[in-house]
Amino acid sequence: MRFEGNYRKIERIVKGFSNHRRLEIMELLYKKPELSLNEISEILNVNFKTVSEHIRKMAIGGIVIKRNEGIEVRHRLSERGEKIFLFLKDME
Image (cartoon, rainbow, N blue to C red; front, side, top):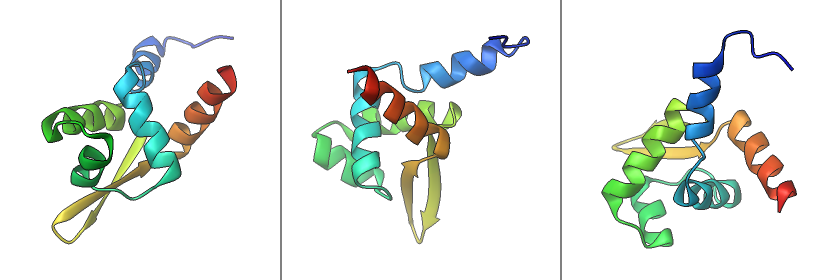
């Protein structure tokens, strides 16, 4: 396997899921796509700002896609995010 100098890109992707809380968010969004930050925060019982920061890092890594719906922003796993989630789930 050759990354052809894309080490920083790969680093951003890995940072997008290299945290236990981000893995929880990935699992939640896999099961229940299109959730708002408030909904994610409430379901996981995690501070809103904490969830927001995790989602930001996940979006930078291309793991989460954001969609505006009125005044709310909905979140779902990207195709990359789904592939990573399923790969990690197989590793269990």
